[in-house]
Amino acid sequence: MKSADGRVRLLLVEDEALYRDLLEVALGRDPSLTVVGSFAEPREALVLGPDLHPDVALLDVEFGDALNGVQLGLMLRRCLPDMGIVLLSNHSEPMFATTLGMQGLAGWSYLLKKSLQDVETLRRAIRGAAQRQVVLDPAVVSSLRPGNRGLLAALTARQYQILGLIAQGLGNAAIAAALGLAEKSVENQINLLYQQCGIEGREVGMHPRVQATLLYLRESRADTSRGA
Image (tube, rainbow, N blue to C red; front, side):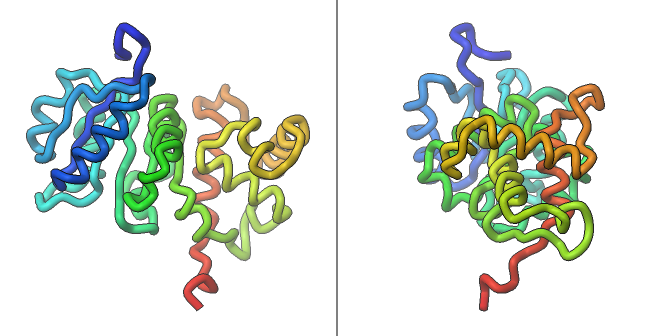
């Protein structure tokens, strides 16, 4: 449940004290957000967190505990099934997708810790998770390329670029601004992309942008040339 003033309620679980403090300060400056709980230990968050009724939980992927961030997110979701999850990681490979399975990913976002200096990226991931979207870190997106087979292989370079921006949580207006295109042109490109990829409307129970991002995750591959 959101705060009485409409702010998104956040639960923060991070075992590095300095990093946790920096996150609290950065998030506290945003008038649309409020941190309702901050924990160093995942098991403490599991016991006390649900009673705080957060809209979104920001979870470190790796703790010094046997419990990791994905497992903690799944356990919290059993108590709060509508809660969004933002995973914070040092690894660019979004392995959480394999753990959760594509159908279980709605409302989960994945950010690299090194990207959190860009507060807008963090806000976008939080907003997306709260709205049951899937938002990927820009650096993760930039490290991926379409596979040689499948639906994405048939997309134009522009369509794949737009799909990557959708996966980063950008709306049509923001995509248009990023690419220097008219918003109507972006809308037409997205509709064509959905048609080519067989992405259905909201009636299937999953937002088309979530379907598009899951397709992007499923059929994209690491760009091996980047390490060359």
